[in-house]
Amino acid sequence: MSEKLKITREKDQTPFSREIGVKAARKLRAQRHVNRTVWFGLGMMGLIGWSVVVPTLLGAALGIWLDQHYPGGHAWTLALLVVGLAIGCWNAWHWVTKEGKAIQEEQEENDE
Image (cartoon, rainbow, N blue to C red; front, side):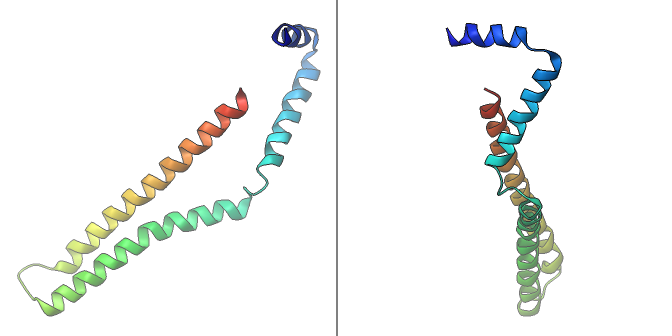
């Protein structure tokens, strides 16, 4: 019954009133997510940046330590720096994918 009433109401609406309804719904959704401000975005960028930097620096530090204590034919520093960078990039990709899925699910939930 309510679906029939909703369809009838949508038919009777003018384009202007539909546009107002869409904007009002968008504002209500935005008010529910007040915690997502510019600072939230900057914090997320910082989190992703640190998720790359920390493994890279740990790999370089371990490589320097290995080069000093076990000198050999190849440079551990460069090899472990690249390994740390790869791990950090994978970690950042994981975070971005996880957040993207959460945002997409939230949008689909709000569209229903």
